[in-house]
Length: 294
Image (cartoon, rainbow, N blue to C red; front, side, top):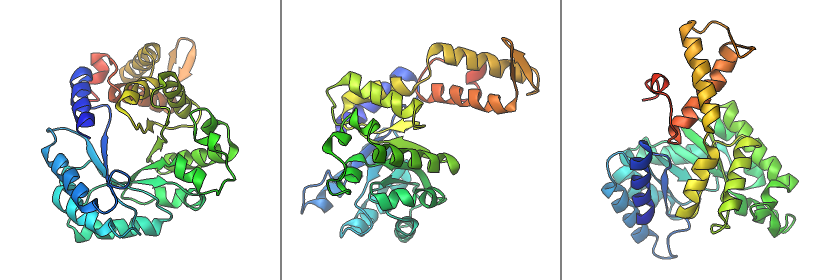
């Protein structure tokens, strides 16, 4: 956890902006029987994080015996320092409501992100994404595969297999679509082959370009740069977007002809998102456009 926080600070200095969040894990990170001590450690780390750090915490599911204690100890103490709280194994909007109520009792208003990890949760994804306190939906690949009781092979948990098994791809598409329908962020699942940089980069590119995901989880610091690079626009795409937006501003957002193609407010929205993605991934953005991002 400390290494991840240090890497976040290093990369923020390098790129001029924070390009990834650090999520401290209480669900799988705590030894059985030592959940309270681990939660206290997590709260200590959040409290000691540098100014401007984007730090989140994944707590236990809402039906776990440690859920309320996590909320009280972490959200009650450092909820205002967190960029979000991750709730795993959310099955329905009622689970989100329970988390929101627990936060209110702790005196916190921390935004929530949720993990979708079962067929039932996928079915409820649109309803969950519509919740006003939910920022993002993440896909929990390994739990999703395991929830099928052997009907999906283990190969579907790998970097390549997760993009070919129909049930897994369908779940990913449902989650991404639910997020985009409600203005939330779809966050792609992990790649467990953390030593394979090419597999990581390929998975991140496919998640973004084929399935509509705009963020992705890592499980090892070595995966962060490949994810950021794969999800960033390339320099030519950034240059084209900047030229179109600059021309649109000059025409007060009226339709324009650009290199023989018509552009209007519909395509301006697309190219502005390119600029935003470039900025958030630390890419170089022309100063004339960057002033609108800062």
